[in-house]
Image (cartoon, rainbow, N blue to C red; front, side):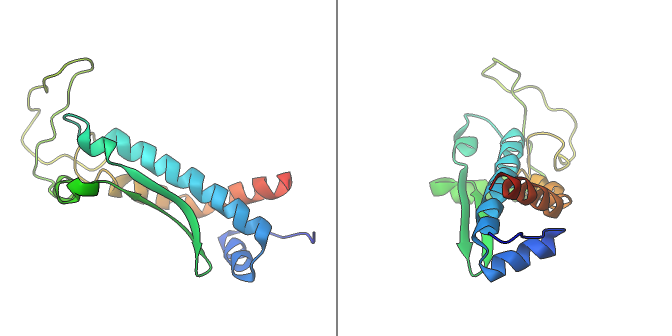
Length: 150
């Protein structure tokens, strides 16, 4: 196997476009790691009453589509309309449940919950936007690591 030089995300994308099987395999592993991390963080932020919404999370791990490697994280299934309302309406109160308790805590203030500030709106968008800042570097690092193993 010829050496594959990867310095940045553009090199990864070019190698995927050329059909470099080792890079495609490594990129799928890297995208799986990133998607799993976003999904884990989203589960920490999703509103929780009985756990129905949190338990509806679906993670479709990487597939190759038109020279792209992509993963999907979604909530809702049959409750998708409910998931959208919970995600988008920043005015809803998303009360926390104290650990081991069946009743929610008392309301803390009246303003909207800041995304990422606890369980509430933007539970999927916030971790994705946070991950977007380091996504390319994480993919490059993971691809390099996987190529060294090959």
